Length: 118
Image (tube, rainbow, N blue to C red; front, side, top):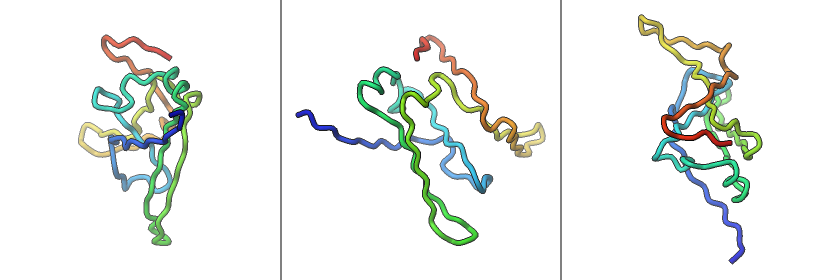
């Protein structure tokens, strides 16, 4: 009927919790066949006036207060067919390592048999 309806879909995250980062955290979601973002293109996002909204909540341990963060991503600010490099790794002995020099690094995503579109 010509009305716009806002629809929210919760995405499954690679890690739903972290005790490692006190001041920052990169949200990661695998886009596979089960993902609501699977097959989404920049053109479809623009045509549908879509944006991706990230909303987080947590507890500030110093003040014991609930904290919230929200950010909206429009099609023009998304790096298509790229993903953030994971800064968490393990040494051969199994020890966790955090490489913050890679915090902003991204790499191209190649899926077998899937054409890359932008």
